[in-house]
Amino acid sequence: MLPRVPVQPRSIEPYRPIAGDEVIDEILALGKELSGARVAHINSTAHGGGVAELLYTQVPLMRNVGLEADWFLVEGDQDFFTITKYFHNALQGMELPITGEMKAKYLAVCEENAADFDREFDFVVVHDPQPCAMIAALEGTVYRKAKWIWRCHIDTTYAREDAWDFIKPYIDLYDGAIFTMDAYIKSPIEVGYLAFIPPSIDPLSAKNIIPEQRVQSDIARRYGVDETRPIMLQVSRFDPWKDPLGLVDCYRMVKEKHREVQLVYLASMADDDPEGWHYYERTADYSAGDPDIFLLSNQQGIGNVEVSAFQAMADVVLQKSLREGFGLTVTEAMWKRKPVVAGGVGGILLQVDDGVNGFLVESTGEAAEKVSLLLESPATAQRMGEAGHDKVRRNFLCTRHLRDYLRFFRLLARE
Image 1 (spheres, rainbow, N blue to C red):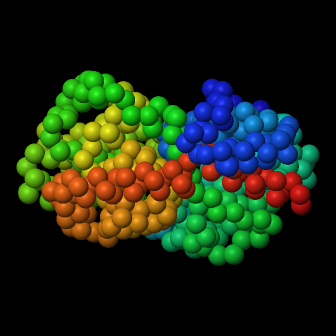
Image 2 (tube, helix red, strand yellow):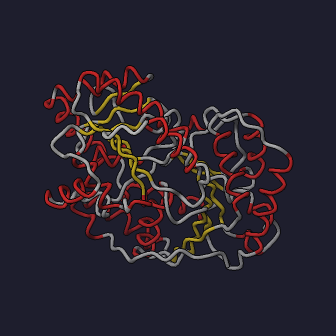
Image 3 (tube, rainbow, N blue to C red):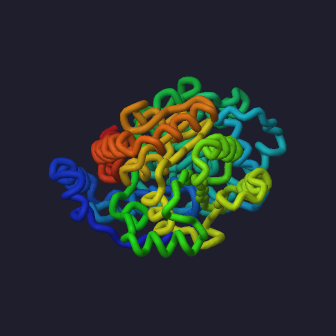
């Protein structure tokens, strides 16, 4: 079988005071209706990125409400993950060549992983492009009797035609598909059922429980950040779509007016993203040794507690994305009552109501202007932070996400 990711048990009941009785009771009823259903989630990494974060919550909660849920990883060499990152970027609109050799390598690795798929399930949820073509190698086998669902987490609104045309025939083999927004469907797909389900955060995870003040202070000292001075924060991979160089430019514009401001960039270097180190080095070179710019990652011990602490200490949280499937770091910041300045793209548009719980921006200069405004008006920052927290509570918690999954499973099961 494919490598299985271990997860810690969770109970749905502690979420009741946060999500409300109506949501929890519906989840329990759906779980009873689907009791014993065998569910496999398949993705490409257990560390780094939003998909892994989601699955560490969703899989154990599915188990807790009565499903037999598991999580598996596809395996591949460095070339495979470099190629799938090319696909990822091309599907988000980057001008990149997709060669026949790259396609052949991708399909060969998907076939190898399909050969290791040797258990029967009722539902198989395949996340993103990396394992998407596995389904083709399983056509006509007993394993294809499951309801197969492709879950797309990326923003494919501007996908290159050649990349979309390559992946679409494999999407069409699925029984159902889940996208974050309907705009992400580049051209009509032929799956039987479609759902639009935004991702979510786990309010009870270490990443979303704010550490006490002394812990925040200890973490700031450990990394040389002065918690008494203003902090601009971005939490994201080192990735061209997160515009790390534009973020540095934004900080420099803000610093012309606010000399005490610091920039903290927190990242997780993911197993399936060999491009990350390249963009880290480019960002480090571009920062030119500025002592008030802190580029930190899991390689320096940044984990969930550290992320939560820096989000709590931040005066403004940025997500200067050029493309964004959803942006869980936006959700996390809003949950912690922080104003957000973010690119007006993709799933960020579902979260940030411009001028209400943050600002949507289209340029580096506009981002700097909005950051300066928030630094100069703590009352505005506080008002936006409260509005953001309330929107997350109503729309983007893991309980709503779990309910949506269970509803979709029920729909497919009744086919």
